[in-house]
Image: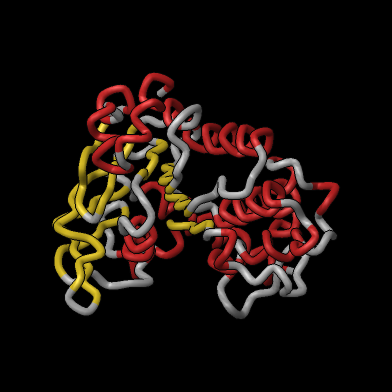
Length: 266
């Protein structure tokens, strides 16, 4: 018991120490290119995200959006340029970053409950060799409650709806106590009500000083909720507040002439 108490105190001290060292931009991407077999997935991409913002990444299929998230997480190394997360290289900032993948990239048949999935978020904090303590279990339950999944904590993730699954992954990010949360098409296959619930959770995180980067195809209601939009089509087409960046001309450049009608609703 004494060992677990000491571990909890060390854990809290470590997290406080990490948070006290965070300064400057949450995310800096400098001249990043990624080339596959001679084809550029990303071409000299440069932008910076201040701490405590909700940023939407917009662009057509194949524009390099998921590749960008992979570079930020350190899953992929850029051919040129660099990425800094709170001034650190991705490999040195893994605890600071949480990733919510595309629905299609998850094996939903894997036998794990919503509670287990969220507890996985504690692994980054716990380390490999320490068993979850009472504090960790309480934290997981708090995160499930925050996203409205307490009643489904024992349910297999394979039985959850699309919106419930995404909320479970957001709860995992909360349990990890990450400072930068990356979401790849979090609203794909999710009904409007669940989308709004997720947005409110993300806005709450933003208001607490967390930084959210969300890849999405939504061009109507959601776009106006962003602090900034990164418009990507292998290169940065535009970056800034939605009202400035999402012009009819830009939307036509990204998606073709048929989406110009959405511009009036953004």
